[in-house]
Length: 279
Length: 277
Image (cartoon, rainbow over the protein chains, first blue to last red):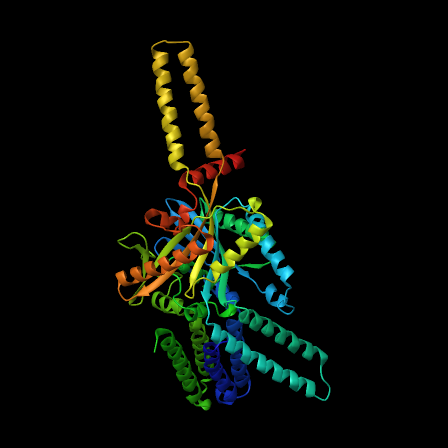
């Protein structure tokens, strides 16, 4: 969680705690209990919004039958998973798939050998061609990249490593050291160390967002949407060669990625605002 | 204070005021239900305040329009620069200009040696880390636009058909008519094949944006960044990237340019035919 998230959470939760603390002033008895329940439900909603707003937001827009018009001729459907464009009676539905590289962070626990690295580089072009060879519809494979300051990232990683090493010594000095906790801390230290080593070897830290965009056509909204869902399933299957986690983009990130076609964010800070979950 | 923070604190303040009002109502007046109602509204504003972190762009239009079809903007999402090599979008008081650079890469893994494959992967890695500013690299597969070729074929067929009818009117049977019939069947077969087979094109391009207080400032900054990218990409791949201009930009932005109209209509009629059969 970044600073902004903590600020928003703190202020919103403050109101909730105020209600719980002063629940007796809501009439006493059953009314006080009801007030506490309302406060707790609110706290729950806020927490879900903080960690998984993509679940609540589409559910609300679907229930209220809400559609958004982000620009002339464009419409974001109530399920928040596609953008429709109507041109001369034809419907073009565009959807997005986010690709997460997180399996690689686990590989960083044990630095790959040079041979393993070479093997990956060797197979990459073929894997790409295998992924796209059977696709018979248009799509765009985007890699959004933003260079980061080497010094800042290095300082940040050094700080994290010191903290984890402190945690490790604390865990080792405990009366009964927990082997599971020790392994977990060691795993985190290995990941941080691998990153520091890569920067020391001259690798430039880059923040990336990878996503696929695809468009389907239909004579009605429904047929365009059905075709889009089919295409997205095929893409998820096709790109499984690349060892990535592929997830359909739903909610506010759909609007952000749609905007990316017309203008990109100007700085890393602006980008990070849009993709809190991927920081 | 920016709009987002203002909205957040606005909602928090409303929530707090409602909460204090609920608490201030005396207990013994039998207004307990009113207290709960005020509390519910206060909590709703609390949730709205938290949601404003990501949904400011929606909350204001929702509250203003209060209906289920929310218009965030009814203007075109961009317009072309006068030089036709960039698109421009307004953001607050500033302008954001975006340019597209096409990378002419015609390589396939099937015709690469192991060493070339490793080199190519390294080149792609270097490409991703090329810029310190935000850049987007895209590989786009789109349906080849054969509309003009199809039109040429149709024109050719209609010319030959006219010739055929002339020959028939003049009652000139024989080799000439046979030749014309042969030509007709050949061009019709070609047209049939061209329409039935979908051809795809894989293009690679880079998107770069820049911000400016004036339109021309944003455009020239974007062009400058594009020039830097072009020289970087050229050095990595040994190719000459091109700044995309005019209508060609549309196939990177608009969905209808990914699939040409003739292909769509052909595909749809084929689907209808299949479903009827």
